[in-house]
Image (tube, rainbow, N blue to C red; front, side, top):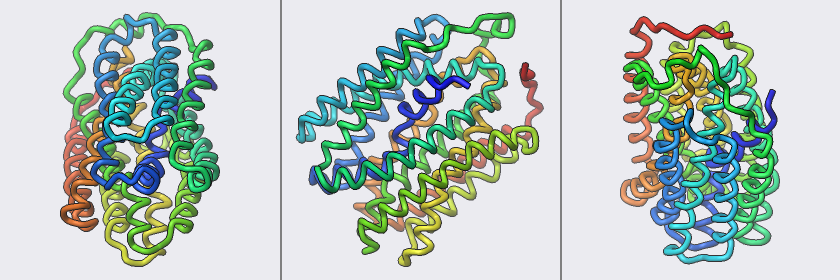
Length: 371
C-alpha cells in the first residue's frame, strides 16, 4: 500500500466526485447558465487532457517526483486564485491552468501505479480511497457551499491540492528492471481499443454526472434531497473498488467491460428521464460505482498490455477526454433538447464503448504476467 499514491489519485480524480457539485455551484452561486458552467469545468478537464497527452509518452524520461509536486502545487495555486474571482473570462483560464498542472501530476501517479507489481490491486485500493474521500466531500462541502457561497468549493480544491503536493515529497522512486524493456515499443491495437472504450465510458459518466444535481433540482426534487442522494452515492462508492480488488481472479476484465457500458447507459436513461424521485435516486446512487468498478479491471488489463507504464500514465487523458467533452456537451444538449436528449446521447456513447470492448474481447491477448 502506498498512501501517497492513494491520496494523489483521490485529489487528481476529484472531478469524478465533485462534478455535480461543481456545475451546481457555478449555476446557483455564480449565476452562469448550464452551457457556460459546463464550459468552465470543461476548460479544467481539457487542460488535464493536454498535459497527460504530453506527459504520458515521456513518463519514463521525466523527473516523476518533481513533476508530481509541481503539478499538484500548480493546481493549488490556480484554484486559490479562482476562489477570488467570479467573472467567466477569469475563471475559464484559471480552470485550464489548474487542469494543465493537475494532469501532469496525475500522469506520474498513474504511471507509478501501472508499474507496480500488481496494478489492478493497487488501483483498487486507490479507488477505495476515492470512495472514502467522496463520503467526506459530499457530507461537508455542499452544506458549506450553501452556507458560505460557491467560492468555498475552490478553497477546498486548493487546500486538497496543496496537501497532496506536500505529500508527494515522498513520491516513490522510478521503477527500473528488465520487465520494462518495452518502454519505447508502440502500443498494440488492442490497447488502443481498450483506451477508446474507457474514454467513451468516461464521456457517458460526465454527460450524466455533470447534470445530476441540476436534473434533480429542475425536476422539483429539491436541493436538500439531491444533496442526500449525493451523500448516499459517496457511501456506495466505497464498495466497487474493493469488490473489484477481491474479484480480480474471478472475473474476466473483458467480460466486465462488455457488460458495464450497457448498465451505465441504462442508469443514465433513468436519471435523465425519470419524473419520479425514487428511480432517479436509486440510479444516481450506483451510477458512479459502475465506472469505478469497471475502470479498475481495465486499468489492470491495460497495465499488463503495456508494462512500460506509458499507457496507464495516459489515464488522465482517457478519463478526462470524455469528461472534458461531457459537461459542455451535456449543457448544450440539455438547453436545446431537454434532459431527454441526454438519454439518447448516453445510449449512443454506450453503444460505441461496447463496440470497442467487443473488439478487445475477440482478440488473443498476450499479457505480461503479474509478479
